[in-house]
Length: 119
Image 1 (cartoon, rainbow, N blue to C red):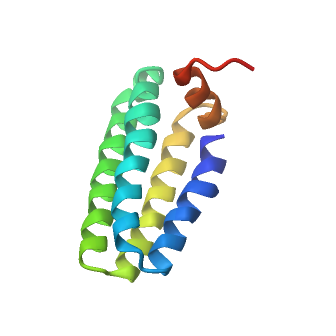
Image 2: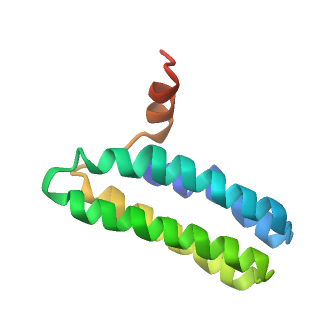
C-alpha cells in the first residue's frame, strides 16, 4: 500500500542520503520523488476521493512544500532539518491514506498501470 511504501524503500533511501550528507543526491531525489509521489499518485487520486478531494489536494500541496523545504535544507547542508522533513512527508502520506476508506492505495500497481504494464 502507499502507506507501506512511504515508510519503506523510498523514504529510507532519502534518509540514508541525508545521513551520509550526499546533498546533491538528496536534492535530485527530492525532486524525483515529488514528481512520482505528488504528481503521479496523490494529485490524480485526489479526484477519486469525492467530498474529500479538497483535503487530498491540500495534503498534496503540503507534500510539494515539504519536498521544496528538503531541497532547501540540502542546500544549507542541514541534516537535522532534512531528516525532520522526511518524517513530515511520512506523516502527510499517512494522513492522505486515512482519507480513503480502508486505505490500501497500491503505489506499485498505480505506477505499473501508468507505464502500461500488465500482471
